[in-house]
Amino acid sequence: MPERGRRRKEASHQHESILSEIFVQQILHDAKTYLRQYDGLPPTLFAQLDNGENLYMPLALPQTHEEKRVYFDVLGTSLLSFGKKLHEAMLIAESWYVEKTKENPTLTVLPSQHPNRKEAISVVGRNALGSQSIFALQPFGRDARRRPVFEPLQIKEISGDFPTAFYFVGLLDYLFTGNQKVLH
Image 1: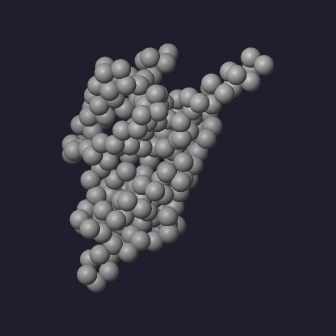
Image 2: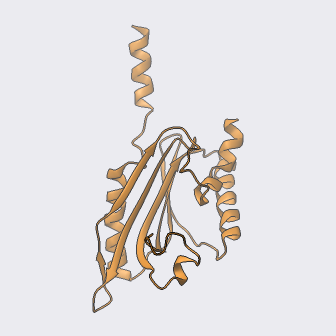
Image 3: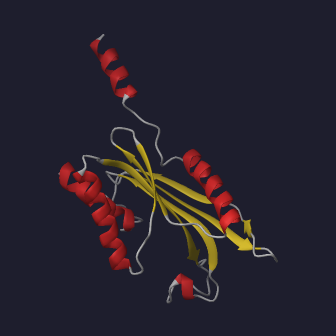
C-alpha cells in the first residue's frame, strides 16, 4: 500500500518533457510560421525547470564561440542564483549546414562560408544529467520569391548514458555548468 501511494506522488511530479519529438514538431510549426512571416528566426531557448515551469527566451547571441560559451554559462548560473534549477533545455535557431558526401567527407571551412551550404532550422536539446537529448534539422530552400520551402524533417532522439562515442560539447552544456556543481 505505501508503495502505491509513493508512485502516485512521484508520477504527479513528473512533467512532460520538452525533449520529445511531439514538442519539437510543435515548436518547429511555430518557427516555420515565424520564418515565413519575418524572413528570419531569432535564436530561442526553451527550458524546463525542475519544478516543471517552462521558460521561453529569445536570445541575442554574441558573435564568437567563446563569447557564446560565456553567455550560456552566465545565463545558467544566473538562473541558478535565482533558485531556478534547469531540468531540460532546447535551443532552436536558423543555421547553415553542409551535407556530408563521399567527395567532401570532412568540413574544412565554416558552414556559413561553404559553397554548398544549405539553410535550416536547427534544434538541439538535452537534460541536466546529459542522459537524454534530441537533435533536429528542418532544412529549407527558397522559391523564386525568396520564401522558404521546407524539406523533410530530420530528427534523432537519444536516450542513454553519456558520454558516448557520439557525444560532443555544445552550447547547452555550458548552460548546465551550475547544475553540475549542484549535482556533484
